[in-house]
Image (cartoon, rainbow, N blue to C red):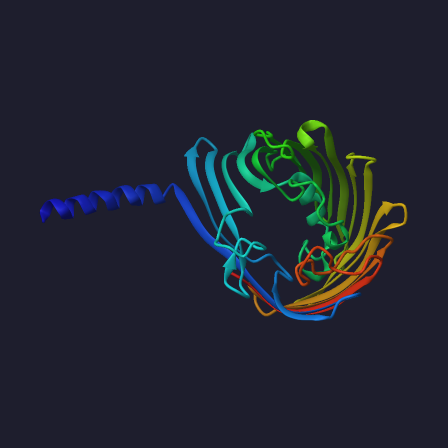
Length: 344
């Protein structure tokens, strides 16, 4: 009995010492909405959906202080579908950590070395200047062509990334590489540089994704910026994608948007235009309002209209309609959503 008590005391002492040097946080987002989508060529859909204001997720992150300004960190984050309770959106299976799964060494002087699956530099440069945060029926990615052969556009697995330290007078940067590991479409490298100080934030990023075991490539570059005038924040992005497979296709995408604070709420608005050449492309206009009931809980509403040109058949909700065709080529997709978002 005494030995048991002594063992518990020793374990408690060691645990106390460890907790003084490290911390672990459980966090997440639950975002559910009622959505109406009307696409040319198909019957309108009414559905419960998710991620209108923020992406639903469950995550675990931690930091250990190693001393001398050096820290170790980890981040595990998985997608959730709170309307059904499923995980790993859109697969609908169990919880995985495909949103982010990384381990890091972090120095206040030298920056961060991060290994694992993470968001790419090009995606970050697009998402931070989207008034809708790359979420919901107003997100800028709605006008991007479906099924692009670019598996690392948003995230890259098996990546090695370096982040500049936050001590460079507003300059920030991210550089990433990922080996092919024998896969035909997985070798990737990219970089991002930016400057953020006061009301101004500007950045540029570029990437190259190997296709068909190196015979082809998907290259991207994007430039964006925002300026907070106090009464409103203006945002603009231009991204240029090139798939050189076959005859090759170039995609040019412009975004102009704004976020306007109104007391406890915010107005979000954006205009997107995609030009894929030969008369193909899409345009989208979106307007939203979010009202913060507290620092963690918000109500929101968004309306959006997307018009396709030529052979384009994009939708404001890619998951609302089954199969590969979401809307008649050259047709219109429009709708609205009303939802609630909670951070924890």
